[in-house]
Image (cartoon, one colour):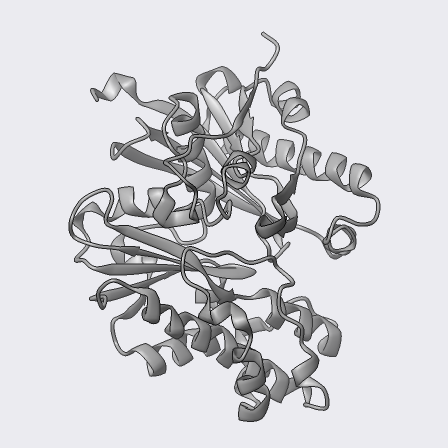
Length: 362
């Protein structure tokens, strides 16, 4: 497509780590023509994080939390526009992922809270949200949805390559060398969520800063074996997970440090097991998401997978903005009726468009 067919989108992401909202500007035709712009992260305060956690599993004061979540996303939109020196009328669409509070695709359910209509009115920009429901309704997992964006960015990257996003849940996109359809994606297992929850429970802090707690501990192999015995790991890909799919019962009796070390080993072992599903071995592992900031995770990944492990920044990508950029990209694809998911990325029956458009008042 010619450059004038690009749209300017603003993507928003609040991930399963429940730690904040990322906002990013991206200009794209919805295919491979991509110009990445400014981005920001606004962290949630501890009180709102607690309220957000209270509705996970689709319980608690959902309407109240959804209203506040939407308002916080509107603040992020306004701040990013101010930072970029843009007025709202310059932006064609906002891609609003919302916050996943329930993900049970086998039961035909996935729920991301966030009021797309309210956000459109608060920001004065058309909004696309509800990216996952149509995929689930058509037999897909509804996740992960970032793989088409990974593949679009990876044009010049040596292949096969694996792009791993370590958020609350970790997912991988395997990208081969044979064109747009040479792709496979799935959730590998836990990401940061179990580690963060463990750190909060045992230290009062919502994250293991610098991996210090895990690095002070030793992996309990018995507990790790119990965690890895979960039947999820033997399921064929594509497949996806809820944030709280794995229980931490196996860690009972462990010290705070040993539990953290064991959970890091669990995240890394699950990522390594993803290779069992790859059509071919990869030349490179590119790591995105908050997990790449945890030295304990990155060191363990390198020990397990070798020196081909590196952050996505080595490919020139912005790891902290990647998912927000992806939902801006998917919003443009939604406007143009292009697929957001494929049979080999979510297990959906056919390439599946999706998203719900909310028009701003003009």
